[in-house]
Length: 109
Image 1 (cartoon, helix red, strand yellow):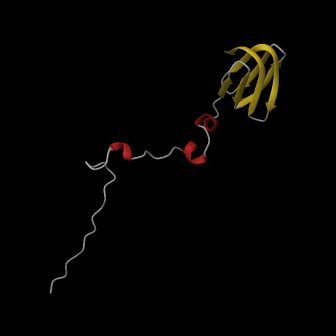
Image 2: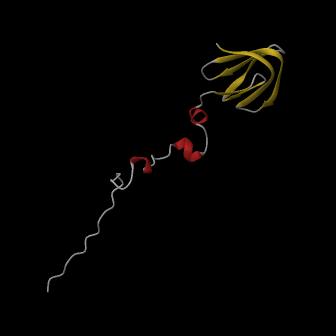
């Protein structure tokens, strides 16, 4: 009596005619797995401007100068000068700063 070997058929992860290439999802990046933005992971500054009244800078390294018309914020690579009127710091942590007021411009120095 001969014994027949059962061979398991491997399923391919490559798209076939039945499934499209869009059905394959690329592996998640480290930032996606951790649930944080890539800028934060790399230490790059992330700047979010809301209308003409608020700016948030993530990954700042400190405040260089502060007045009602101008705030200079240091980051790893650049200094950002926020110009406007009635400028106030509404939130400040070790790595995030939020400035509110009537924003006129933001300059990268």
